[in-house]
Picture (cartoon, rainbow, N blue to C red):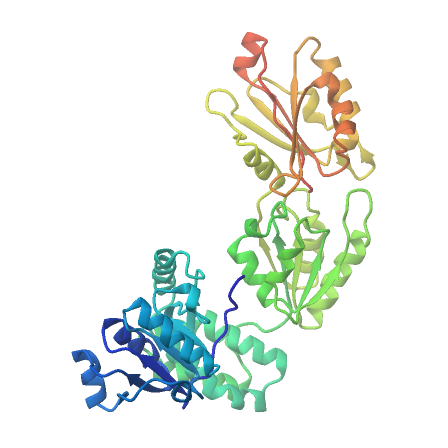
Length: 467
């Protein structure tokens, strides 16, 4: 970033606007949203500014602009509309050590005014460092649509009640309270105009400690997707931001953890191919124990929790302990790998059956049974199967002699360093060795109707993604 976003305290501070035309009026409108003391320095004023002066909302000064006049200002806006005058006034203000914004001249700006979504005291500022103001306005429009008009009133009420909540509720219960306020009934009531009812509901919750939703421990099994930070779901991000403790595998993009609450405990449990820092039984026991302590737990898994993620063992143990549990799906490796090379997993009239299986069972690497039964119109997706590559090749060559299978390998799909290799089936092992693909791999075996008829098989999808 060339600029650093920051909110400045403006109550009672002095802001100078040098100029009296439309540009100056625009800046006046902006700063009038704050509690700053506004001075308009100019010999003449346009009608809008005259009205503001007459109403006492801004002060009008006509003396010469000097460094001494600018001294002590929180901000100085230069908005004369004359490039030469603007440059001279910029130099005077800088001599006084002021923070200066010269309208429409980014090179002369210490501070750049953002596009603002105002739900006071909730304020969203959007900036593009002066490069794309139209884009900033488009983003502003989207955010305006997301935030209901009365949201600021709810935030203000929460601010007034924070001391009361802090005096009566413990840290965990307070987090539950505010999560409930902004995610549940109170926010919905405010949005529909029932502010008084919502306020009474919140105060009652603070008095009694009964939040209105379950506040005991819970576990969310969250799919992180193939690893890229922007491929986790919005619900997954929300659960990360609510979590007290996060148990995570060997994430493909460490930035995913930056989406979590800063004070959330993070516990690494390994789960790298062939090397588990924690046995599955220990992970499961820890999830149960944390939830029984009343913590909100996230078990963050690569891909989708329900696809070769050993979720059933964890779900069974959590339900047996009567713990609230939720599964948040993620982008599974098969979808991510196919998308990364621009392919579809199915093809109407060509591939109408998709089989997800694995080349690594509890006892080690093996050839999954769907391989021997592969038929025209079927795509078999193999997770964690690089270690079984030689066995898979042998089985295919034995069960389907003469079929010119071709393989496409995609390693580290959807991530930096992605590798795509196409080779004949006979060269599968040597291709894996040559490109140092050892564990993060997934195989797609394809035999379509048209391929069976023509005996000519186009590049087959074979992708590599960590499970």
